[in-house]
Image (cartoon, rainbow, N blue to C red; front, side, top):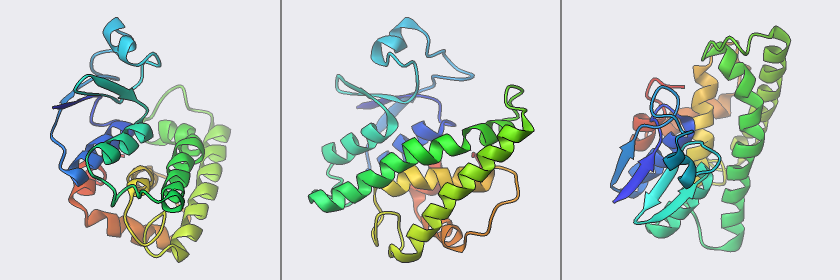
Amino acid sequence: MLRIYGRDNSINVRKVLWVCAELGIAFEREDWGAGFRPTSEAGFVAMNPNAMVPVIDDDGFVLWESNSILRYLAAQHGGSALYPGTPRERARVDQWLDWQASDLNRSWSYAFMALARKSPDHGDAQQVAASIAGWTRFMQVLEQQLQHSGGYVAGPDFSLADIAVGLSVNRWFGTPFEHAPLPAVAAYFERLTERPGFRLYGRNGMA
């Protein structure tokens, strides 16, 4: 059985849990990370030298990096509807998966830690404002994409990209500050909520 290492309040662990729900993959999960067993333990570092969650062990195959895990599980468990096989359709999904990890996530980090997590190490008001401004700019990129994509991030059909981006959208709405109006993003958020996996692991009260 698939084993998932990571706390279920981690946004990146929740990506993996959501894709398991979409594909009907049975799993066992162990709590690791903040508030649980430290990822600095030698046994965990042996699995992931970055000492970060999530990590999976699929019958001896160990993998880290949440978006790589999404791709692997879709490929391994017949998830072609979520991760198309044709090069151009797959590249479009990969584009938005990589955008979520490299651009969108970096933008919200400081503001989220300050406003949602109340981190004492993130109390600089200027940095909070700069983070919100950057976050808003990237969310406006998403708004523009959703206005003409046909319903989901990479096109008219739900894909792996929506798992990664959808959890970031949940974090946007769950972080307390005055949000710019983004009607296409708001409609997308409601559309995702129709999916049981998102209700379980996305819009479940955690940002």
